[in-house]
View 1 (cartoon, helix red, strand yellow):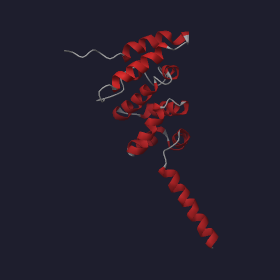
View 2: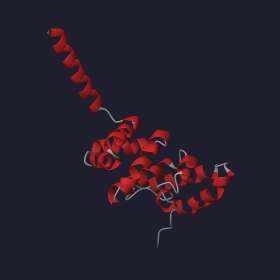
View 3: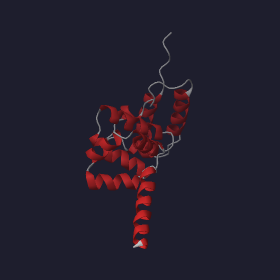
View 4: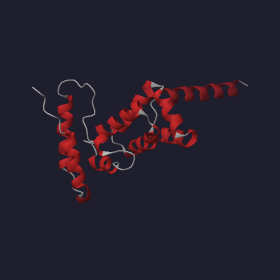
Length: 162
């Protein structure tokens, strides 16, 4: 009896500990397959810390996290769509080739080739612009050169009116 109770306690503790940690891309993909993308995105949206963890994963440019972005995107609305777009755009300086390949597959050039900040601290948008432009200029895939050029035009910050 004691061993059975201890086993149940350990299993419950393991569930609590894993639930407290950030989700992995595999966790999210499994949830989408099991519960559907709309349900999963709505649930993430209603749990800020979990949604933020997913966005940070997408921003990392990890291929599995970018897959999560593509799986969630069709179910997004205004707020969640902008958040996902910004997360993928923040992945642009890290893996421009993979991000550019997402254009036309649930994402468009204008959404991903932008300054992905609403009200950044001074210097943040400028630093992003430099990193993104450098990454786009370093692309070697000839099939992406034209798209990278168009993307760079969109990423460039507009001079302040004055």
